Each structure stands twice: as C-alpha cells, then as structure tokens.
Length: 130
Image (cartoon, rainbow, N blue to C red; front, top):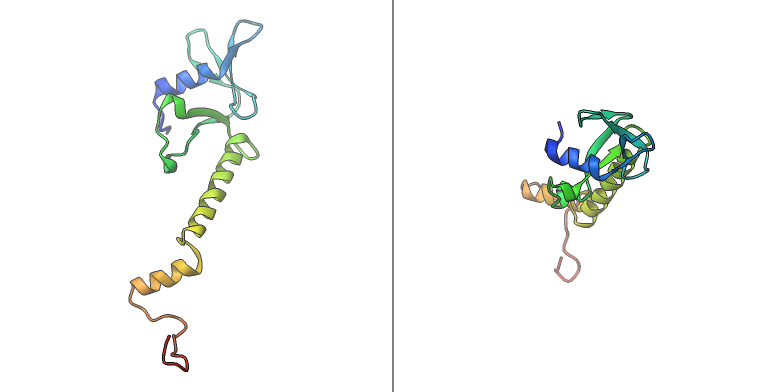
C-alpha cells in the first residue's frame, strides 16, 4: 500500500510524463528516464515496468506525503529505487554510529541503564584516582 494518496500518485505520473509521437502520454522514471507507465484513453495508467512511489525527502527526515515530495522510481534489483534505498540505509547507519546509537558506546550505555556492571572493572591508579 502506498503512503501517497491516489491524486498525488496520478499527479506525480503526470508531472513525470510526456506526450509521445503517437499522442499517448508516457510517464518516466525520475532517476533513469525509463518508460514506466502509459496513460489509457480513460485517463488511468498502465504499468510498463515495475515502479514505486518514493519520498524525495525521506519520512525519517521529515518528508511528508505531498506532491512536491513524491517521485516515481523504477523498482526491482539493480534499479533506481534499490540504489536510493541502499544509499539511505548507509547514510542512516553512519549517522547512528556517529551519534553513539550503535557500536561499543551504545552497548556500554545499555548495560549501564540496565544496572549491570561494566565489562572491564575500573581500578584506581597509584594516586587513588580513576
């Protein structure tokens, strides 16, 4: 199920389309310009290849379900949607690591929050300080 309304999806395909030589409107992928859908005589869309509607600015970063934030990308392995998702996952993993939400620091803080002892006991040095 898409998070975008039907009217937003339709308007996105219209925005990403052109009228071909045969007079039929064809929607293209926002990433690679492959033809992804054709408009029927009744105004509906027929998929030519699999595609997904995606947020330009991800929901996790405050992107809404609006027309300005919607794009159609070809989907499947080795496609625009897969590449964008992989990039987003990598950037989020890096941000989590830099913020201390993953890795050794996060594990130590979780142990501390649970009231468990540290893995390595802290001993006083020769001057009586830790």
